[in-house]
Figure 1 (tube, one colour):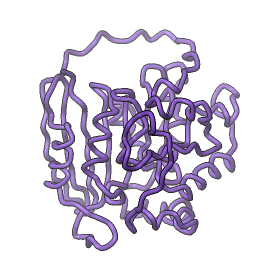
Figure 2 (tube, rainbow, N blue to C red; figure 1 turned 30 degrees about the vertical axis):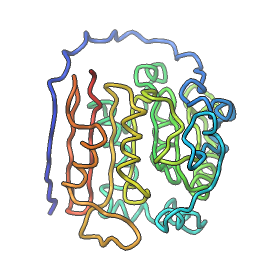
Figure 3 (cartoon, rainbow, N blue to C red; figure 1 turned 120 degrees about the horizontal axis):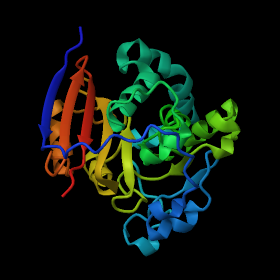
Length: 307
């Protein structure tokens, strides 16, 4: 049986815009990725690529933009440090997906991708590839705590996003993501090569994101809230970097999983974290929905309201 509990907070949505023209449009021109980052990270943004990792860890203890690009290390809790093992990255990329698909994680990575895209792009199906010429309408997405790129790479290949930033704290997980991109090494639509894939691999901290305020159109945060040191701070960062009207689709595991290494949640905690971070359903088009599936899997769907 599947147990579904839903809590919804919403404000009246803005009136629907006129239907878009069905005429084919040319692919959007290349974008300057530096514009999405705080000043201290703009130069590092010039090296962004789908086949290499760019370091964008903050300078811990100093949040000023002038020092933001320093990569001073700070002690990390066990829940974060365990992902530095190469065995964990291989486990996540090659062993766990079949187990997730069997029921522990709703439908596995493919279903996670489809559900995320259906919400982030409001009603679109995530399985079919789109014309890259339409990507400009869907903007730039962040795959937060991307791990080995199971969802982020799918998002980039879909043609539905102009660009995807895949960010994680674990260098080992990101290395596996890069290896996956190189291993597949298949062309995207239109004959472009893997280097043309609209994907950037970033090592960063969910609690101090390197992006400018209100710069990102949508965020996927998949099965990772229980892994970060401070879920409240990370969710506040998601709200900060999202544009008004931007959406986040976040998933995590719930109690009765025990809080030993990871911090698990109940529905009311997830609602409190989201509301405390600014996703309170207020503003034009703002909404918050928190759902429990199969008693152990939590889903947050939230839209940042416009003033």
